[in-house]
Amino acid sequence: MVLAQDQLRAPSLNGSLRDRATDWRPLFRLGGFAAILAALITPITIAVYSIWPPPYDEGAARWFELLQDNPVLGLVSLDLLFVVVNVLMLAVMLALYVALRRINPAFMTLAIATFLVGLAAFFATNPSIEMLSLSDRYADATSEAERIALLGAGEGLLAGFEGTAFHVNYILAQLAGIVIGAVILRGGAFSRTIGWLMIVGNAVGFGLYLPVVGLGLSAFAGVILWAWLILVARQLIRLGNDTQLNLGGAR
Image 1: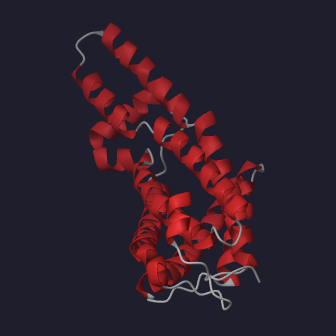
Image 2 (image 1 turned 90 degrees about the vertical axis):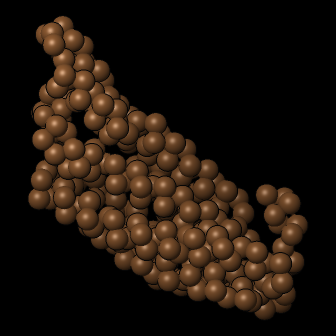
Image 3 (image 1 turned 90 degrees about the horizontal axis):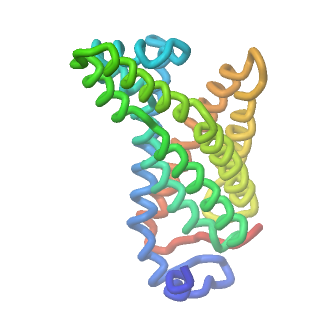
């Protein structure tokens, strides 16, 4: 990080970064296109959940049946597409970090570290491929003892999928988004609209933990953050194509 900062020429009085700062343009473009892909995948996943609700409360045997009947639907129901979205979001968040770290280095470092910890928890506990493998073995099992053992393994994976790691990822991602939104409001290359959408969307996302209305609020937060993805994608691509970056300083 020190080396990367040293390679950038100090900002001029008008806040523009020139010359070697353009080395970051490929990352900005990558982050922008990653945001577009994430924005395309997210509503597809939500639509699948709405039309074919996942069997969250029905146990491993029902999941094995779903994965055998329709492997694609089963994998999507187990958040495989959200694994892809989170990989894409890694590029988006790294691009935001580079673009905003001069505004508030401490908060941006804290935000990206928080996001990465949550991301690691999500990746470590997503059971989609493992459940598909277990479902194949369950279908081929020739003894009741083998089936019982495979069901136990499946229940263990589902417990991790819906347990602590999920909530760690969810909460840390919301917190990181709020912090980054607050940094955006201080200045730089992103509009205040982008900053406010990030803050409001992630704050509303905490509504998941409210009774009765939790899932509805979480879905509404998803709509807000989908709009944020579109706007941030456009701005990152603009930065990636700009020969004279204007990352600016605090307002």
